[in-house]
Image (cartoon, rainbow, N blue to C red; front, side, top):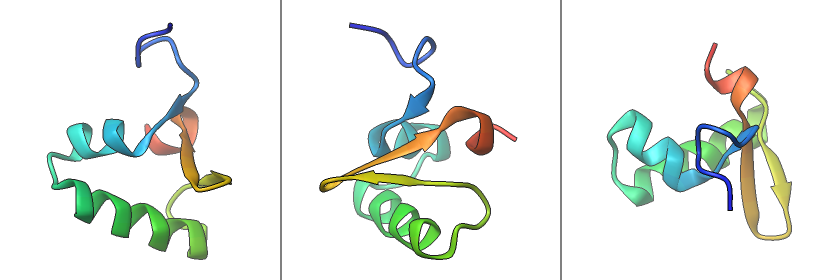
Length: 58
């Protein structure tokens, strides 16, 4: 399995650690970004969210 430095997408738990926020806050933030498309792109696959590194890291 790849570690988070090799993957091309982040999971919500990665965003939580990077932003140093609680899990519930990370989910709320990512859901809001998914709906608006700003400030980066979020992909929803079933019930899972994936955040492309290129957009998030900018």
